Length: 96
Image (cartoon, rainbow, N blue to C red; front, side, top):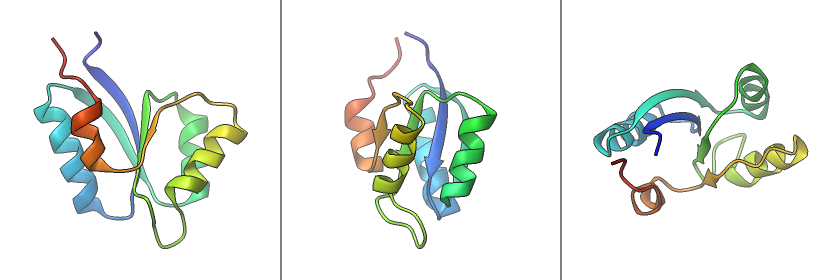
């Protein structure tokens, strides 16, 4: 199992982003991550590099997890999208 993740985080709060990153690192992962909070910023990030996973706040002032999913689908990207940091701890196994 590869313990390095490229994570695209759809989140308007820098504090919440840092909490998510901290939990992933506590789980043994090393990360490359970018935080976006608009459809345009997400689109640009998807064009700049490939990602292993998208973690999205369910609702943002001008964006949502559902819109992020639709953006992934429109680009025909088969990436896992988690819409709650609480799920993160339960879904991602710890690396060996």
